[in-house]
Length: 108
Length: 204
Image (cartoon, rainbow over all chains, first blue to last red):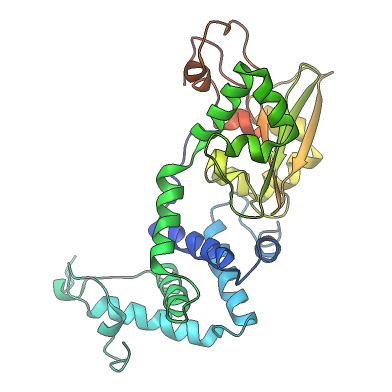
């Protein structure tokens, strides 16, 4: 049972940290977080090996932000597509910036 | 690969969804980029089962500390510099020859982060979460841990507010060891309850 690396991919660490930072900031409470995450982690929805845990973390974040009126699912979807376009438009070796998205030139 | 190397940054869909969340939250001032980096640094490098092993080794070595740990685990653990996040309380449960303790979070993944770091993947899996309560003996057997039939197994369900740490029994033949050497016998799984402390002379 030894010893998986802490995070399999960087986005998992970032999603985890966003969830904790939102709790630190008091935007969501720990209880609210664990209940919302738990609802996605029941046996009917979650992979038996636990491999989709961080997928659930991301989906729970999206759900709570939408419920709070912080960001609609449509807005997040649009923004994630913008990030994908920005990555494609960024020359190799340069940092990927959202402003590199050619379809969203006004965005800073 | 045949693709154009001016355009070979690919962001996978999950990474893009997280970038979108982060962008919104930082723009709205709800989280700071530096705070996110600090959290990642902490959980990738600073906290892990070594913290819990020090707590257990201290409890094995110092009866006063063990009593404090039993009465007020949050404060006793904090005295070693391991503070949980706000609102999280700790309770230490001590294995005895008559009783073995096992921790789980049936709801999601609540875990004693300050002393064990992040949970292993199996801790977050639906089968462990459901079966630890229904059939703890069967779960322990899958971890290679066969307990005597007359040993009671007690399962503790962690919550967002209350997290548990199992204090395994001190192995026989370790009277001569100092705290640092004792800590090396304390495995992560022994503090979850899915294992026992290692025997002396059998370091990990």
